Length: 271
Image (tube, rainbow, N blue to C red; front, side):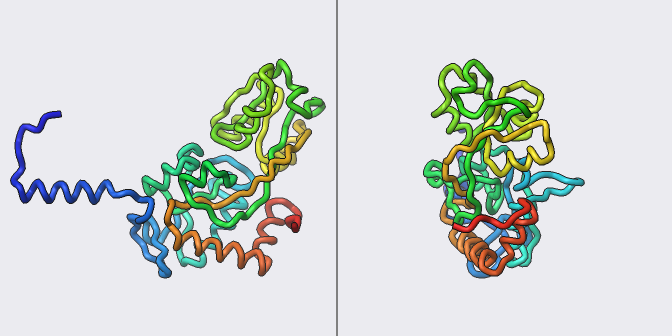
């Protein structure tokens, strides 16, 4: 694009300086409005913005117009410590796991039942692990699908941009037709209706769904040894360290166990 009118030298210099300021990477500087002490700066003063992707019960889902869940309660501990309110930002999971939502200052952190992986760790920083998970297989009640081999010639569903999807792509034989869904709600509805023969997702989510939908069943688990972490913009060490401290303190003083029991019915298994 050609420029028809030249700016005076001083004006041009100011414009360039402004442009460079606006294009500065957010990977090490927050561009945040509120400083809560200890170097913690938030995107919006007085608010802790949490990116997530609904629905993903029991970690986050909407009930009576309010977003509730295990992750929500855990981050509420952080918000209380910072003396701010948590605000849930519902956004496509792909924007979270690629780090794009942090680079555009959409949120301060992401709590989305998200597994810590080397690929994700390249585009964001993670808290200490706060939940152990593995992949599981869900089918309609009475179906005897327990392995990928059992699904030959069948449709098998997975959620977009998830570790379950990656596991299916690596392990399912070519005779299994893989079907991608935007979110876990659509995936589970497809399993329940018979649109797909079975689906894969994190075990905690599937067991919660089966409780509410007894016409479905979890028939197998795959030992993937996953752990969830809270995501942060790369370099946002002040907030990450604050969250780490709160998670570790909550595990020691029993608050973590209380939240776990509330959403899963039992205390977490000790390692």
